Image (cartoon, rainbow, N blue to C red):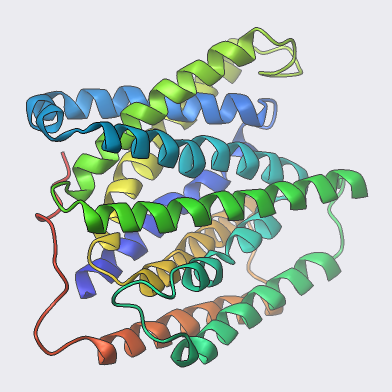
Length: 325
């Protein structure tokens, strides 16, 4: 379980970087950002998966292909379109903290799964997480607005997109964890490669469709420097956030009860906030610091509760160890 927690924290560190990309590429649409990221991820996954082609092809079933298509669509393509739209309209902090409700939504949806701690035992850790999210949202909406702030209608659209991303990734997190626990023949790395290839095909199709719609890719005229930046950011996300982050998350999911793996998602929020503070060259305000402390306390408490509830007979079934290529 300790290894599962470590994998979950590292996945959060990689995933937090995805909130910076829309700020680095403000002239590109959410459709372009999602298509670019996952087409690149698909190419990287294909290259990484070539040595494993025969082994993976021998394992794949029709059910696996359907699951990969559905999970890639909800957890990658749709999720990132909504996330990018939210960041461009309301900023990193509100978006990351609405999506930061994932530990609560995943825990509530997965509370009946095998290995889950009884929900009444998690009330106080979840309350700490919820208080932390309340603190940061109070800070976001009471702090002086930045220059060029979005209109109220744009902010409402952004909040709706962030909420949609929350729903999309809750569905992905629960279904992906359940599928991996039911199909132990796949390692976290293998499932990440397969997910990447399917996401790449979906991203390529999305990009081709978007190119036929005027203004669907970008509004302002693009220079070669803009496209170089676009390619560089997407390559970075494909390798770090998608390939490595997903592999680490899959490895964590197979070692942790669903209620605890749900808590691990909070580290994506914490790292997103940290990267946002670095990007804005400022320290967290008092309420932001309180939120971070509350979120960390809630997750730590939850880990301790799960450790106490572990059966004395040994760990839950694992697949083969994670092997990053």
